[in-house]
Structure formats: structure tokens, C-alpha cells
Length: 134
Image 1 (cartoon, rainbow, N blue to C red):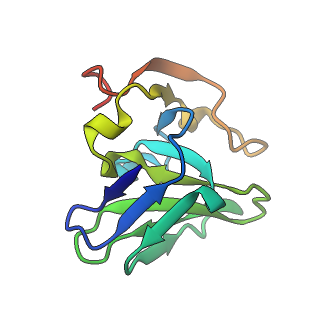
Image 2 (cartoon, helix red, strand yellow):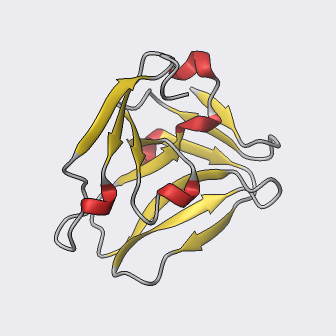
Image 3 (cartoon, one colour):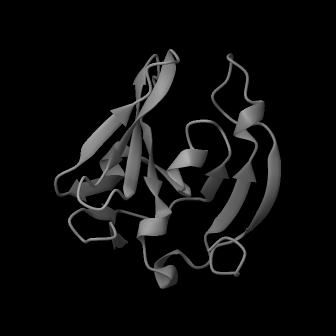
């Protein structure tokens, strides 16, 4: 799969489709306006100049990567106490025909506790391309 930011300066190539696309309402994800596909970092190739923003107000958090020219959120990578290999890729950067059919879930990230960085409440589900998610 291949996608790009709004101005085309940053391209993202995925080795495979993600298992699902997550729409999260937590204080980190919601302002980014992204639908996250999770993959191992070795399955993602990003080309182009990017800027980053790292949350420092919490111990276990994320670095968000974005295009400095158009501002498109591209991906996040973990930092701090995160031990996971996965990263999140903004699936809104990919053409609709590339993401159609991927399951979509809406997660209540605001309900997460300090003990977990995984939303436990799914507030909805659908399929990419069904007119609800994109």
C-alpha cells in the first residue's frame, strides 16, 4: 500500500494492510484527526522530510511525525517506557480504494487508566469504505 501527505512531500509504503483502523478519542489521538493502522516498524517505509512532536506530560507516550510543509499527521512511534515494536500510521493518507474493506473500530481512549495504554471499550465498528469511517 502506498499513501502520501496532502502536499505529496512525504510518502508512506506499507508491507501489508493493517488488521484494523482505530479511531481513538484519547487526548493524544483525537487532536491529530487520524485513523490509526498499527504495524511493526519494519513493515513501514516513510520517505521525505518530517517534523515531530513528542508528548512530555505523561511517562508512557508517543512521538507524532508530520509533514512540515502541509501539516499532515503521518505516524506515531512510542517512546519512554513503551517496549512495543508497533507504530501507528495515519490511514487517512491512503486512497480510499486501498483501505476499503479494512475493519474500523472506534475506541474510548479517554477511559484508559494509567496502568494500560490500550483502550478497553469499543464504542463502534464498521468497515473502511462503508461511508461511516471515511
